[in-house]
Amino acid sequence: MRVVIAEDSVLLRAGLTKLLADGGFEVVAAVADAEQLLRSVAEHRPDLALVDVRMPPTHTDEGIRAALVIRHQHPEVAVLVLSQYVEERYATDLLSVHTSGVGYLLKDRVAHVTDFLDALRRVAAGGTALDPEVVAQLLVRRRDDPLDRLTPRESEVLRLMAEGRSNSGIGDALKVSYSAVEKYVSSILGKLDLPPADTDHRRVLAVLKFLGT
Image (cartoon, rainbow, N blue to C red; front, side, top):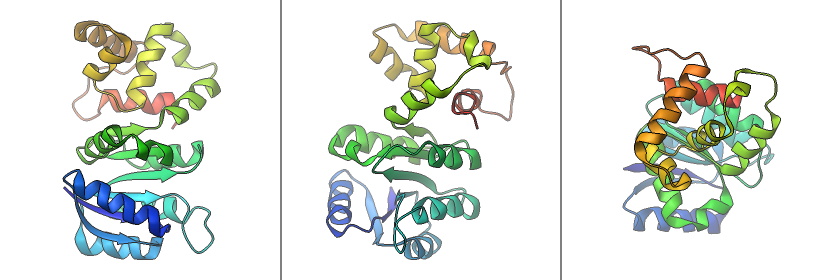
């Protein structure tokens, strides 16, 4: 799996490069700013771009803006952004462009190596990976919408779906069977008015409703 890393901290960039290489990824470029990121993605066409939200020159939103450009110009390239703090707008902006192959994690998650690498693989495979802290804040913020139809357990299942967990992962987290998770997911999709369709990914649409995008 080929990856471009965009991180302006020299130490973190080197650490991520080694971490990914040790985890079986091929780091084709590791750059320090958004301009170099866009050039590298256009040149290498990686499977995944790992992007810091705040990058030079202003250290505000250069990284996330570059990530959105990648999503528009190279939709086949998955994007996972890293942030020092929870910034809900950036997560929802990213998910509003495409409904697959995206992730938003806090930098603290990098220390949990196995989970972090699993998140990279999941996003590169077309899934999602949202930081639990982001999901928790969005859950508190949501009011007066179809999500109110869900039971507490269904809300918990949807929260775990939003984090990018599979049905097996949800079952492990909640200590319930795979078939029980399937029933919860089916009920959630029904209550959110998401009938079966050939073109739309109902699971992703449910998460987008949860995020308010």
